[in-house]
Image (cartoon, rainbow, N blue to C red; front, side):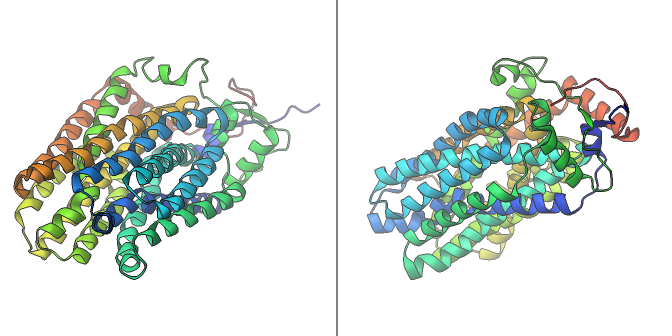
Length: 465
């Protein structure tokens, strides 16, 4: 009997070209992320109208911003872990349906308490789906392009956030604030249903968890149509798979300093990012800029971030964490300067675009970094916990911003305070990039890319489904 050909799944993925399968995966993930970006920012865009309609205190409304982010933190840690057990696709679909349903219900909220509860539950769905989407994209990308593809993926997120401002500016005057929640609820439910049929499961996840061989072979043929993968091929992959609680592995095998610095970078930058995305429309409007223009300014923040997502992701693939550090160092003076332009809209819009390019682009770089630092068996957990801990900063940003507004701080001091955490994040990433575990990995990737083995070869050790 002829011995079945052995297929090195990892080498097959590393040697792929960007084709129909990859384009389809990125299209659906970007569509999914566009809707998530809209839903994540929808409260910020609707806040001025809701505060006016309910005669609410601005500082009290900061708790609503924090509630959605608190739910995101729970979803990222809990559902992120489930992604390493049940698969990336299932958690993406479940999260999409969950946040869609409770965002839709938010249109009928009648007070701060009900809106707080609904946004918390919707946040759980958001938090569970994004880390698994990062894991899915990362596990289908060759190492040399992982950060770039995650950056492309988050262009969908930032475009959705930016379009949310444009859509809100049109919908709220005509139909009232509930209309933005109706749109934000119906769309993710629809994309969740479609995702059941169009999204593939990760072949790396299926290999590590010893999934169905026929399903893996079918996916490999779609990834590499240029190769003839036999029906009864012997599948192998150089991926570790360890027993025990995945969260504990985040601090094992020399990962403790890496994980701690990653979490610090996440949380610190999120303080500034969510201060800006939550309060910028309200603060700018109160300074004398028309409300419609204030909302557009926040949309431009996200628009700048969409471009920054791609550029910073590419820099991360090329020069490592220094690319993100450089972006944050540019962001610090731009954010601080926002408090000194007054009602002069031209420099205001320019500063907002550059700040968005750097701070949001840098945050997407951190997202990509989290997706590449950990092996497959704990990638969703590692990414989810980084997101979850980072959401502490997301919660603190809007709440601290609300308190600073209540204290009546001058705009110059307000935005100077908002820029400080970005500097902390830059420092954490600088030291993260100097850790031996990352230096050794970079050397290994360079060596692998210069001598890529054939994905079809006889006999090898590895995990077999």
